[in-house]
Image (cartoon, rainbow, N blue to C red; front, side, top):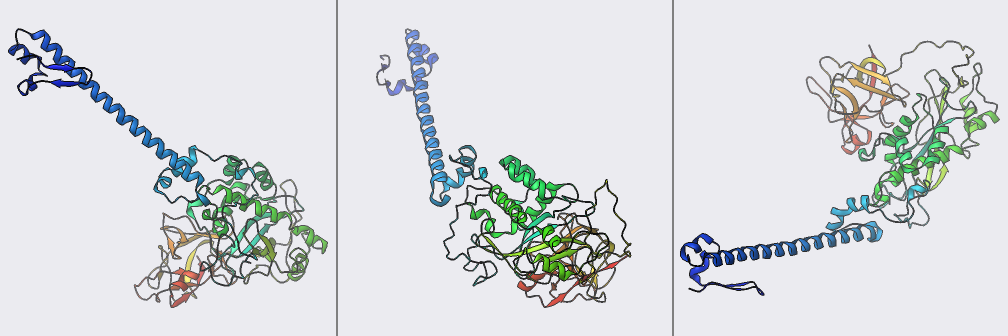
Length: 503
């Protein structure tokens, strides 16, 4: 038998069928062809080396093909995410590679954050004339573009503080509290989007380079606790997330929450700067004093010069000391860049008496105020320890989970004044709040809700004091309670109010 033929130029092996198993076994070749062991070992080794080279070349070609596919995919992803009309990203590639591309391949051109007051031009509002909030032909979101007009929170309130003890801000200036959306009927939404909740507005502004806006806020947007950033963060999380024209969908998929957040804050600061409450009152002879008392009607008339002849809402402490004023607007267009038009308050508001309103000077620690007559002590509703009772208390109360119960022992509820106004409630189960579906609950896994107290001492949430149930609690039957609009949507037949019985 002749040795195998080897054609190096084409890497073709020519062997007989009998010799195939021996080609890769030099020992077998040595035993069978003991006269030519060296030659056969050489041929076998050459065959093995050539097979390795062939496999290496094949692997190399596959690797190059994979690299080419990945490069083409990334290129399509980049061009798709960055260049798709209107910023839409309908393809699978864009949905997969979009976040990576936006983080590692930023678009060229000026950033919106370099101009904090500039509104996003992603969403075009083509309606002419621009719609006026609270005067829409249909109920949103039927045919209303909520990126172009705020709905349902169509009335915007600019709230100002007069913090007199401890004193906050200049002695002749009111400070900014916040910009709030109301639902045109006196009720309001709050904490509307957990995905846009932030821990520190100050950090967001510093990261975005909005230094000028941050400086303005430090001058005019003050907290009486000394923690201004906590107040700003609270205002955005509670109210800013409820303004429909600031929704991320109105800014396009390339935006995060920073741009609408900055526009919200800048708009609040701009509005506050043109509402000079102190000067309007002073021009009418109403100035801070330890001894003088004022009529509510005189104050409203003085401030009508600021609000284009419309009423404002005055807020007083339980002892009748003026502490807050709210200006009411409807907005033509978007909340962040639309025209703010003064209007009447949306519902029954205000907590000041008709006469005997006190307007105290700001008290700084290095100055001792002239003592005023002591006010009789009074228990604040929903503070300290007590029971939350249903109506007059004969129909039951709340138990620790927040349900209505008519038999057994009521839960001891602990109430405290919230840092930013209103009250917080806690039971043995944990903080109490109203869920996103409107139900009153007390449990450890929730953050405490911000409740307020109505003029008659009833518990309010979102400005609404009506609570609904499927049926009246009786015997050992426990009933859940839903607030306001949620009770209406569920068409709950039983309506109750919640009051406080101090212990």
